Length: 158
Image (cartoon, rainbow, N blue to C red):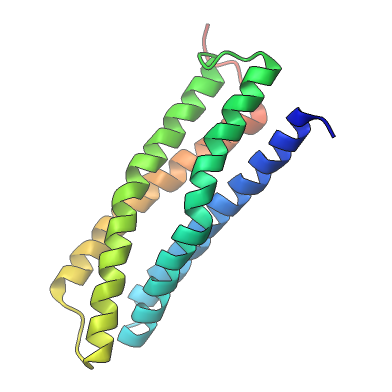
């Protein structure tokens, strides 16, 4: 296997893990937050934070390293329209993801504390939940757009 194919394999596997973990985590957290069960919210939010650290974070670094290396090996300048746009969408997703991580950590702490004290969640939890969702939608759309650009490599302009 040559270096390009090795990078491509790592790039594809890490992209699947990145988006798959994100979508799966969002699915479970979204529905746990609507369950009315503080215990479920405590468990799911704690596991979502763990999944982000274990799976999402490493992939966030693997993606640009392998992608830029493949672009270099293939002779594609980073200013190639589909590539530049995909990098911009990836950056947008990252800009959304950073506050999401902070929100998830805070939500997990609030849910764990409320559950351990047999209390309801504080109103701040719902505010964080709404922000978490509001940031998640554009991040998901940006990643879907990135996938489209990576697979199809369309000529966009120029």
